[in-house]
Amino acid sequence: MINNNLGILKYVGLVLLLFFTVTACEKDIENIGVDLVDNGVFDVGDSLIDITSYNINIDSSRVDNNNINSLPGYLMGVNQNSNFGYLKSSVISQLRLPAFGVYFGDNAIIDLVVLDIPYYATKDTIQYATDPITGEELEDEDGNPIFTPSYSLDSIYGNTDIEFEIKISELETFLNVLDPENPTKNKTYFSDKEYQVSNELFLGNFKPNRNDTVLYVERRFLDWDSSTVNDVDTVKAENASPSMKFFLNKEFFKTRFVDNQDSPFFDSNDRFIHYFKGMFIESNGFDGSLINFPTAASKMTIYYTNEEIKTEGEDEDLNYNGIKGEEDVLVRLKREMSFNFGGVRTGQYTRNYSGSAIERTILNPDKINGEAKLYVQGAAGSESIIKLFSLESLHELRNKDWLINEANLTLYIDKNSQIGEVPQQLFLYNYDNRTILSDLERTGFEVYGGKLEYDDDGNPKSYKFRITYFISSILDANDPEEPATLALKTYNGTDMPNFNLFGGSIVKNYSWIPKGVVLHGNLSNDRDKRLKLEIFYSK
Image 1: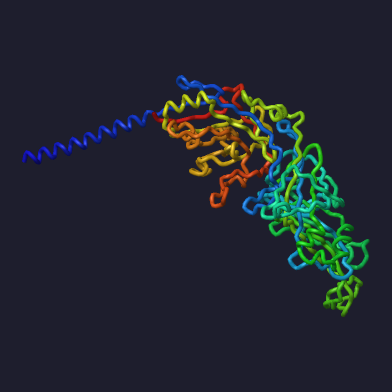
Image 2: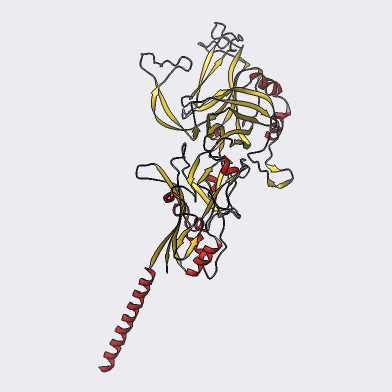
């Protein structure tokens, strides 16, 4: 009996010992601290932690589609911004032969050649249909108004009310898929490349138009008399969405395409792109808007008529001579042939920072002390460099032997300086070796962050990145990593890492979204809004 009681006492003692041990550990873990690094110099006990931030210019970015795993977007237009200066963007693209080849038939005559480039657009409501020439509202046979879908245009930046010039030329520079100097690699094209052009195909003023949903093609040659309009085709996209339409030089395509339809240039797509190398769509002007658009849906269509022998139906007058039902008569028939954008596509950006707020900080950044404002813009624009630790502060922090629970880097928008729409997401990466941070690989974007955050009034406020693993690896006293320089850029879809591919952690050099944001730097006059590194730790 005594032995049993002793056994029970030993058991209870062990349980109590375990309880007090766990409780003591929990109390130790709960000794949570938080420190803010928000100003070039910030006291943490007896330590000093430095943050230095400044702007850098991005001379060029990759703009081609030769990497099937990273397809960029394309940008066209011009814009003048008092913060970021002047940007104009042009688009260069090859065309592809129609699936059934090229044959215009006998005595083909071109009615219209149209380059059709869709907008990114969202259907929002309906509106009255209007005459494209007079602007008057249209009615049906019973006098009732005709309604048509209404769209809002997406991915357009700048002033859509200002016209700018569009010039479309024949491209004379051949675009390669493979690098001629090393055919084992794909050819890369950057936004500062120059191109040779020749024949002018279009020149005119342009501004975005959300109601540009219909194309009217006048057929003037069905009766062999060009002075009369025999019929009008109404051409509309299947989803009735708006698109940009440029009417190209008919004589050029008669000479180069119709008159050469029997030549070997149209036997294969490879021969065709050597014969007609593509189009250079150039934007010019002092100010206006910049338009992102889907090139995959863009195309050039030739509307034409040709001659054939036909037998008319009882109610048909195909040759427009006033007699119906004739047999074996020579008639002109309506035709069309489309050449889609395809093959190699690329772009060209031209920048001028003169007179803009960013000019000094981008051309002569203070890399020692940092800057009061940070400017981040896409489309081969500007990025921000962020250096988090000095050698002195790094040594002192490592000696503290903290367990890092969470570390957040927060950047606030300078609302007094900001002009225009800000990017919806920024991207923070390792500038030294151009790789993603380990936090992104471990936690994904939802935790890693970078998306635009809003204040209580619904206004854009800040961007925050959770970089816990990155900070932990640097402050680990037992096996520390060297601190890396960080860079901040606008986020593009190609920044999404693909770890299934070799080199999937490398940050790709694509950037086509021209939105820009002005952020408070480490020397901002508003001390509460200076960029902050917030560290939650356990002792």
